[in-house]
Image (tube, rainbow, N blue to C red; front, top):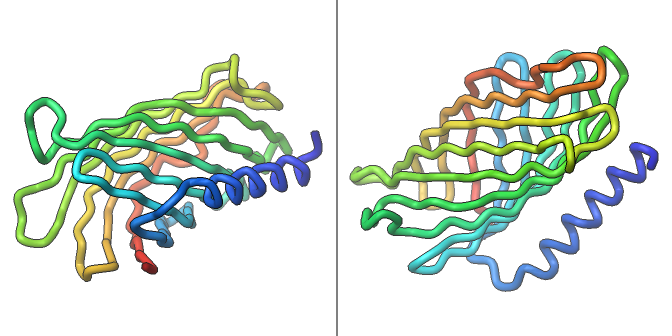
Length: 195
């Protein structure tokens, strides 16, 4: 499958996902930047008293010229472990990447776990972490495996604006490089809800 067809397929899949996910509590945009990377996304989130679900599409690029297009879906359960401020969940992310210096591309499906702890502060604030992995069995093209780890601290500064600081480690095993780093940076960002 040619890269342009893969990208169109991912966009179509995300459009279908957004069209079929039902009533969303909020839609929004997010942007995270570091000295070497940028990550732009759109998301939809639903909340109930006991759980939350988030659907997102992201475009990531770095200074060497690598690109990563992804769509993701995650669910989290609130009040885990008898702690009302703790949320734990599962997340899946389908991705298509292009690696510039070796002219490679690949795609796959990452699966993993997420967690968030809401701090006892006046303004809503939380710390969160996630770990996602795509083993060789669900990775194709020039990519053989992928791993993403992220930690983040959020602070809601306005009712519809949240600022955050985080660290992301994103690496892929490639045919020509067993541990190619797409991202290993601190970043700052903002998330804006538009409804």
